[in-house]
Image (tube, rainbow, N blue to C red):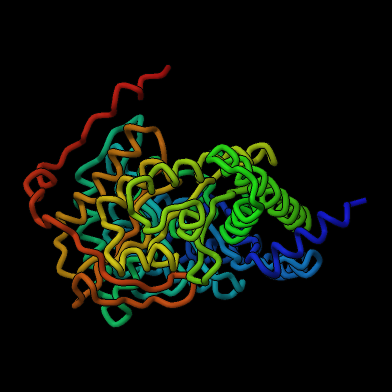
Length: 457
């Protein structure tokens, strides 16, 4: 029998502290849809998605109702679409993106990831076709998300790909000018991309994964914030070790909830269960913010000295608690700092506390990287490439995942506001200092070699 105290605690986490399962993401391998005839390929892709995911939303709703825990997003992540384009010409790219978009709408999911290329060591024909098509593909579809891996600890940094992605981000933002460049929010540039990430825009089904699999993204920044408030308000003598312990225990409970629901969804659908990604992914709601956790533990102005250490403490404790709760922890698992999606982080930027340089320092110890960062629309492509290269260098050198999801908002400058809506939030344009000063460096291109720690065999 489950103790009544645990039942009440879980109920409080749901009703008051914004506990939810942030995403149930079904991974689908579409490599078998490859065909020299583009029409047949597209029909196979549509059929594969319908067959695998036709009952996903209904099953998620059933499990959500059973446990009384919201499942906020139902998503799909297909194997990298660039592989299907190897035997096609460029004319197949946009029809493929539109079929993915239409199939996702027809099965009722929110987003579909996997319009993906892995180019850390160079470009195949399919990779290049896909990347060239990204601006138009994402600007003309609603649900399709794209990710490109430009670096890894084993391969180093492909600066030709970095430069290309700087240009593609600029182009995509301009094509979605009427929506404050929102198209760029559906594109993520990675180093060391994870193969089982359920969160967008970086989700895709990596090599070595089952043909069809359920990966779960749980979240609970509000739950952790309230647990820390109770600890501090208790009057007991508290130090940072106690704070880390409370975060760890709370992350354990959150992960248990996610795994229970994920395994049941997978069982009902008759597919493999993959991982629980216990990343603290915030929303724009007050009380559901990673930034508020930092404020609770004494960082009065996010971006002040000590903020990076607070991120490191949180990230480590979340990982330890989740790992103890499940043998299937994966994805990114830690703390996200998506600026526009987190009202406390967005406020810190608005009020000038949090700079781009401090955000970059924080990404060295968080789960991912520069996420949902809004910059001026006149930021040049080489500067965007330099920002991507800096993040890639952090990931490659530290053998961790880093990424850049940056939105250059056409027609807006530092201090002006961009609004995306929903989970994507809103915020002020952050100042990019010394824009253009690294153009010569990034234009050299080539490959920055892998660091010494890549030679581990």
